[in-house]
Image (cartoon, rainbow, N blue to C red):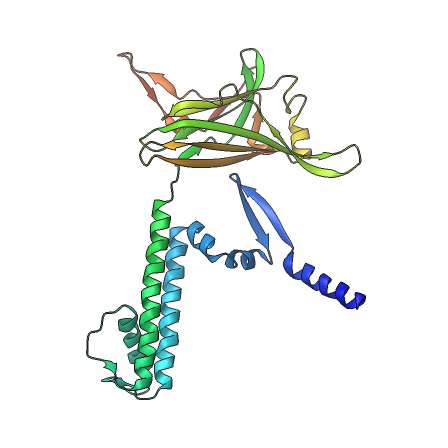
Length: 305
């Protein structure tokens, strides 16, 4: 009995925990591996809300064609059960299913047997449920608050106020404001504890300014590397060796919809440039006005020794 229970637990463990790989891309976790898509399909609601619009529309089309194909085959199983349809014609049965599912009802083709009426009743119920489901999913996707925030392609470590400072910049790509915007930056790196155990540790990076009352144009985010900083004493080689990465999280209230929006980004070790500075994007016109030149938003220059 004990041996059988152990075998059962081993089977359950193998089935529940697939072998996957996790990759961080722009602050988002991408799950890859044999069991990845299996896990996504176990939560179809989340999948339909998060996939791109083109994928959402493709899935709807596939589902629509599939369900009409199933009902067309069901009508064909009933023999000559649709009036004015060619007996045995899959296309006639398919388009009759389309008319029934969408509650169109042209009247040219109609059920003429009890079997066909039963199938029509079932399809009408599924059609009503399907329309309600697709409408709800479409509204949920449109109503979900999103932020269009651009982050610089790289982060730099440069001198600021006489101190080495980690710096990157971000910009609001919409013509509105993100109110009470807050920025959080985390350092993730591999470490070995005193007991010899390997672990992935997360550190908070204090910022010179972590919030702003209104984020409308550009924001230069800075962290001073002093003795209390987790980056103190780090080198480019050490960042790569410890698989270090920066996780950036921005949140605030979109003034247009009055809802909280979020944006995330990540920088790996090779995205952090040492002894460099960003190209200035704020310029002045001859009449004294200022303007932002976002053409050089991602550009950096090496520091002169």
